[in-house]
Structure formats: structure tokens, C-alpha cells
Length: 370
View 1 (cartoon, helix red, strand yellow):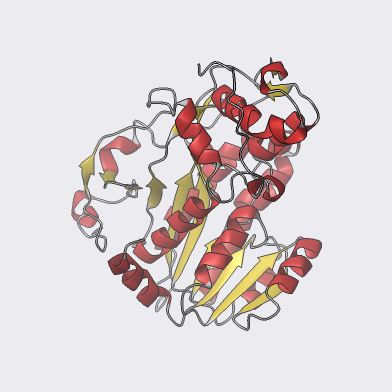
View 2 (cartoon, rainbow, N blue to C red; view 1 turned 45 degrees about the vertical axis):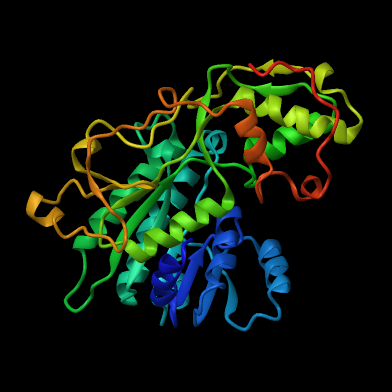
């Protein structure tokens, strides 16, 4: 972040009391770490994972500005209590994995939809200033329970801007991002385990493409979106695109030699797409194209219910936004080449911790770059 931008965000978060739901998850934990770099008054971490809460509390035992609560986001009484006297909420708690949500759809509805309702009620009752929902590119033209539940979360957060009681001015907005490589449950740790076991590395389909970002980028998007939110928007960071099979090949080249294995002997097996899984992802829809603002790094989808006159109020600090009709589709965007993917996986937080400090292999690979 440039110094001018740091000044803006630093000023926005200075003295704030912030609650983070799902705070021990991959994105939530990175978000907490980045928030503590600001002069915040308090970060309150909420999660229902008792063991991970304990571990995170031990990590921050010398930090007086953070506290931890074991709480299920569907428990409205506990949410009312933990939201008391807070200013901002980052709502990152969710069921995020497509196969799990397909197998347990009622749980997905309970956490991802009803949980959003409870968060909204608690925020309104406690008169929070802003609440931001972390969504997914899978919410765009969804084909699975997880994506559909995230889309409903987005719609709820937009609609909740019109539920304020007299004297309440809580702002609700959303962020939408792609695959966070290196997060728990992402393909990177899975591929690394398969490589360590000698393979094969399982890719569902050779045609599969995805928008990708790092944990740091995901948390930064959320932080920036919170500071800029005016009400009802969906913020989207422009992201690079890769083929999953190219990612698998790059990881084989990087990780196999660390286990004394030849990258050239490691096979990639194609297992077929899982139930509800797309071959590509989208960041925006045809319908949204008529109400998108675009800058160099961001897309902002304005509320469908807003009129042209109302849209004139969406002006963001130091973001040079212009009207756009762009539609981002991972199958139609330029793909990262092998060198770009290799550089990407060396970025902080992508490879598992045990592999990040291990030197890159010096033996050139004979694998093709296709």
C-alpha cells in the first residue's frame, strides 16, 4: 500500500473496536494480523473452533488489543453480547467448501444464510458503523449450494441497508474474491501432500480455470473494502487466472525434489469435476455489467435497487472509478504462464509453512511448459 493510502486506512481504523467472525480461519487470521498493524482499539475474534481459538490466543498472549470468544454465529444471544460496544464487523465465518456444502446443504443454509441474518440483527441492534461480508466468485451464476448460499448472503447484506431503525446508520457491504491459494482446504496443500506421497496429483479436469489470490491479498481487499463501503456494494479485486493443471505441474517441479522425487516421474491424474463444480468461475454477471464501477485494481458492483441519481453518491477516496460494462470470466481471461505461476507460489502464505523455508531446487526440470 502506498503511503497516502496507508494514511487513509490508518485514519479510518484508528481507535476502532472491531469484531471478526470466523477469525481463526485462514482469511480471518490474516485479517486480524493486518488489522493489528493499525492503531485499533480492540479486535474481538469470534469462532466456534475452540482448539484453534486457544492456539491463536496463545500466539497473541502479549497483545492487549485482541480478545477471543467461543461463539456460534447462529446463536443470536451470544452474537448480541459479543457485538456490544463494537464499531465494525468483518463477517468471515462460513462453510466454504463446495463438496462439504453439497453433502450437508442444511448446514450450509444455516451457517451461510441464517448466520448472515443473525450477524445483521446483532449489528443493527448494537448500532455498528459498518459490517462487511466476505463472499466468493462462486456466488456468480451459482451451480452449487455453497455458491448459492454466498449469493444469498450478498443479497441479504445489500437489503439490510434499508432495515435501519430511526437513529441507526449501519452500512452493510460485501467483498467477492476467488480461490485463496494456501488457505486451509485450497488445492495447494492438497497437491503438496499428494506429491510428498509420490503422486499422482489429482486434477478434476484439464480445462478447469480459476481466479487466484494470496491470503495477504484477500485480507487487504477486505480491509480496503471496509474503509470505502458506502452501502450495499460488492467489492471485487481484479485477479490473475490460471489453469489448475498448470498449477499442479508447477508445484510438482517445486516440491517433488524436496522429497527426493523426480518431477518427471510424477503423474497428474484427471478425476472428473465434482458435484456442483464449475470448469470456470466468474467475477461478475451480464446483469451486473450495467451497474459496475471500475478502477485499475477494483470492480465495484452497485446495488441493483439504486437509481442513477443514487449511484452518483458512490465516490471513493483516491480510487479513480469509471462506469464499466466488463464481465470477468476465468475461461476468457489471459492465463498465467508457468513462470508466472512459479513466481506466484513463492509468495508469502501460498506454500505450506514447512516448505516455504526450504530452498528451491536447482536442478532444471525436463517437464514441458505447456
